[in-house]
Amino acid sequence: MERTLILLKPDAVQRGLVGQILGRFEQKGLKVAAMKLMQISQELAAKHYEAHKERKFYPGLVKFMTSSPVVALALEGIDAIKICRTLMGATFGADAAPGTIRGDFGVSRSYNLVHGSDSPEAAARELGLFFPEGLVKYDYAAINWIYDPVEELKK
Ligand code: UDP
Ligand code: MG
Image (cartoon, rainbow, N blue to C red):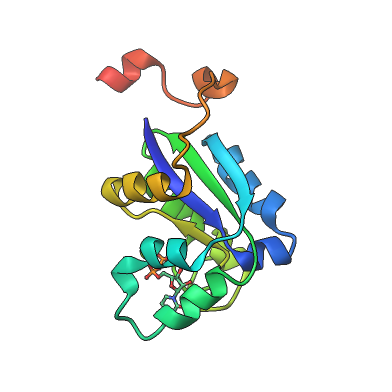
């Protein structure tokens, strides 16, 4: 099982799209392992986006991400990182394919509704930043109906 940090960005919250976007991930089969509505501080935004510090869009990105609350999610599943990135679509809304979250709900380059970790290392780092208290442990009832039978996975 892999875990990934997903953020429903301020535009998703302000446009009332939280339910629909979360639903995309849920219906695909991802387990919600933690979830909270929160205000991102300057400090947290800087840590989260430190890889982009030298980029031209960085100041605007930090301003956007701290302008209004986000919904932070820890999602869990086999290949969760790749699957979530696929569901999200290309970075810029205008380029994102129909059927993806960014392709269906937006056109902007910066207001692109959703963040998803892009590697296992990034996921571990970002989950630590947003959920220092840890995730919520529980059995996911749907799991036996989502993945191939264990015997198939071993082949
Ligand atoms: N971004 C932007 N302008 C750009 C590139 C990126 O405003 O030219 C913003 C956008 O919100 C994006 C975030 O910066 O989601 C992080 O960029 P990254 O390249 O990591 O894209 P992502 O991984 O989110 O698809
Ligand atoms: Mg990225």
